[in-house]
Image 1 (cartoon, rainbow, N blue to C red):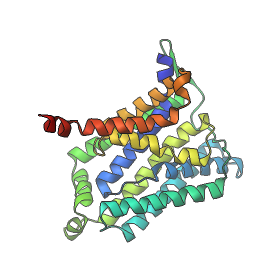
Image 2 (image 1 turned 90 degrees about the vertical axis):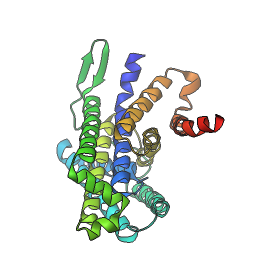
Image 3 (image 1 turned 30 degrees about the vertical axis):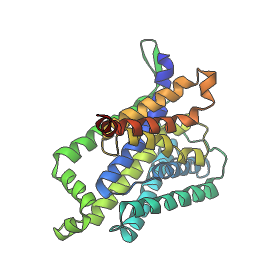
Image 4 (image 1 turned 60 degrees about the vertical axis):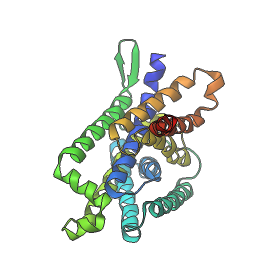
Length: 286
């Protein structure tokens, strides 16, 4: 059982990093980015093409993929800040759904619907703690999630930059009148989250045989983790992603449940929504 839980840490870390990026972007720009996983998938599959077609080394291909995911995320951010900076949250969310569908369609057109082999950027080394063994890539992915969570929490809560970023999200026009370079900060967050999502998928993709669409749809478990964190808490989102990865891994040992593994994120979403509404229900029951 413990080994199964440990095996779920790699996908759980990816869910967590993507989810944390969604929360960070939402808290700093007010945009709910449904394409976060698709942007990371572009990075991972660009690295695969660079390795197979151009003959780059694994490290160089990974850098190319990281750059591709960052630049593409920057372009999406530029589009959103140009056309929808002053729009309501619902309008921006609707626009992001359209962007996500477009990116998934473009990715399938460019990379096809067959899995590509992503060269590992971390040596295939096992790390053992007692009777539990995990891959070094899992440790690195988990470390990425922890560093991202800790760093972003400190920056948002205790620095002037964090206060400015939160102000940009709530009152962008006011912040701009006060001399804040709103668009530059927003684009910086888009580039940063695109890079982090690409890094997460570059770490887990070599151990998976997923096509582009499957990688892009990792946004679903990531959004489940985001809901656990109520779109606000980066640390809780991290925990939610790791727990979901562990649950998916453990479910493999239960034949009656393993066939419905894809449904687990939706069950977690429902549980998170019910939990978030508990206070209102209890108050009405009194």
